[in-house]
Structure formats: structure tokens, C-alpha cells
Image (cartoon, rainbow, N blue to C red; front, side, top):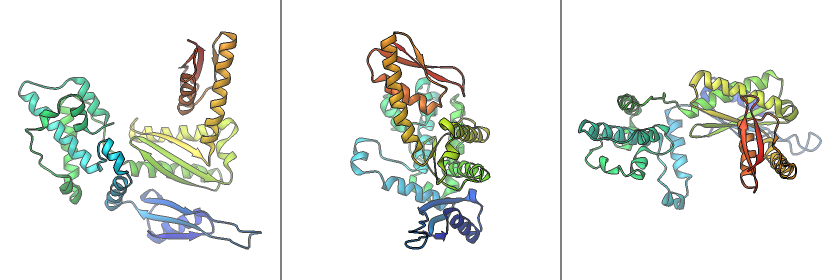
Length: 328
């Protein structure tokens, strides 16, 4: 861990980037502690601390190891074990090779199974097991082990390229493979630039889960980033999403939170949804919400789905899509 300090988080970050001689988009930044002004600006004053590490192959391997280490044993016993990026790549490569082999012998698997593999929501071998096709892997001798791939990054690249070509051979459209940690850093830096241009002091941290990137903005001026009824925040999220679309097609999705706004907004939407449902039941006619983001519409749908006598659906086009609540 390399710690850098400053009177503000941003100052600490700039010091670290300068000392490491790396651009912001090539750095993995973690805010360890924010600055404290202290009583009357004198007593108990503490500088901000940030941990900065250059993004490299070593960083990716550390992230893989930390992800696996962080999964409780009882969870792994109930679910399939967590695999690193390298292990998942090899797993997919073996499955594709096995499918090609049985198709050459005049057999095959359904298009539905292929499509499920392509979704990449589960490991490929798990999908074969769940659909009753795991036997096709029995006669296939794996050419690489996960340890070999992790010790040789160039071998992983070769495996990914071969897997992509094999998926194309199976008639499946292959999306490019991206390092989500790098993508998260890039979009966080993009949003940070916008926040800086707004002359708002704020720090951005990120986390991700499969294809979703979550940005957390911490600032002493949340109102300026959120805006009236969240309109500025929605615009910021739309800009960030377009940034991702332009560079990575529709591979990734993004959510942005400012301080605890999303949690507070969820509570407001819950009350709002309940009032709409009660009005529908009392008046016997449908009601509709104001235009909402996809995440906010999901909250409304979830609340309505738990209530008797009412249903909900979305109408309209983005960014003016809204929810209609009606009787069942």
C-alpha cells in the first residue's frame, strides 16, 4: 500500500499521481480517509489519505485473489466456486472446444444453450451441467491449467483469441473482451473531469459486478451534482453511459450515487409508489409517474409487485420513459 496525504483528497491524489508519474486513468485510487477540519479549524485537524497503485497485470491478479479470498466458505459450498478471470477464460475455451468436437461427430447442443453460454452470466461448464450436457467434457483433455495461464499472461491472451474464434465458428456473435477494472477507472476519470469543470470539490470511487459499474461521488456540495429532483445527476449518468456506449458498445452499464442520495431516493420512491397504488385502488383508474431512470423504474415495479390488486408497466422512450400503475 502506497499512501499519499494532502489537505484535501484531491490534493493527495494529485501528489500521488505526480510522484508515481502516471496519468489518472492508469491509476487505481482508493480513499483511505477524508480530511478533517477539526474543532474551529485548529484541534483534531487531519489530512486526507489515499492509496494509489498503478494498474498493471499484477494489480489484476491481486484483485482476482482478493475476490476469491473474500467469499465465505459456506457460500462457496452452496454455489459454484469463484473463479479468476483466467480460470473462467480457460473454462469457456474447454467448453467451446468440446461443443465443436461433438458437432463434427454429427451431434450438438441447442441454440438456447449456446445463447446461455454467450450471456456470460455463469461459467460455461456450469451451464452444461445444468442443461444435462456435462458429459461432452469427459473425453476432452484440457490443454492448459488455471495455474499455467495465471503464470503466463500471454497464454491467456492466446486462449481468449482462440475462444472468440471458436464462438464465431459456432455461429455466435462474439463481443470483445474488456478489463472491467480499466473501464471503471476510465469512466470514473471522465466523470471526475466533469465534476471538476463544475467547480465542485468531490472524490469518486468505483466498484463493479460483472457488467455493471457503480460510481460513488463524495462531496460537501451534493446539491450541485444532484440538482432539482435529481436532474443534474441523471444528466451526469446519461453522459457517463454514452461515454461507455461510444467506446464499448452496450457491454457495460453504470450507476452513480452522490453521498447517500440513492438510498434516500429509494425511500422516497417507496412512499410514492404506495401512494400511487392506493390512488389507483380508490379511483379505479391508472396513474403514471414522472419520467424516471431505469433504476428508479425498477424500484417502482418492485414495490407495486408486492401489492395486491395493482400492476405496473413502463411506457415511453428514454429519457422520458415512465411507469404506469393500473388495476390488475
